[in-house]
Image: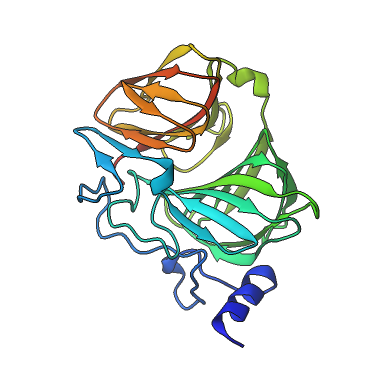
Length: 290
């Protein structure tokens, strides 16, 4: 069996592949693999595909890493799998931001994770989830799913439909506690609550709005009409904000952004967001250091 066939069998069937180098003696591959970090913090390393300013970094959509495996078409905002950019290893504790499209009936077979907070945000279609904790669920647009991998879990993700693709964001955040008991949660949000305002979808507090993770991070989604301007205030000193434009065109603190652009800001207590067209944006506030 050649490498391509081996990977396909492992990813689409019952085989194992590594999602974390911390797992040790597991099979590695070029689809879902992380490189170890040399430092944690923001990497100020010159690179032609990013524009780094005094306290901001711009990642244009067409400079992201890209891998098309046929059944999986994935764009990587940060180094992931076969895409390696020493500048784009992470933004603070935000380690992975993958923009994935999965073909009908296809998906990731059962595979392990540990010591990572994993957030999935469906954008289109139906994504079926199964895990070693006994959870079976389908997540759709309007849902948010979170897993605290902790001491270790196995899960699979499949496109439930045979005739439509599924699109979703998968986001990995380093936790502030290691080896916690694994947990799973998902919620369905009211889409009206993000119209011309920022709807909180994630926080560190189990009693707060949205899902929660083991990290001092807050995520918000906003769907803004053209011309609407809003401010976002940083919730914890020392945190930074990474914005990802899902649709449309916006301006953040004077920087114009377009569909699927990413923009990080740190050393600030507030950012200004203006919609230059009807637009949708994901705001991810995260600690800049572990």
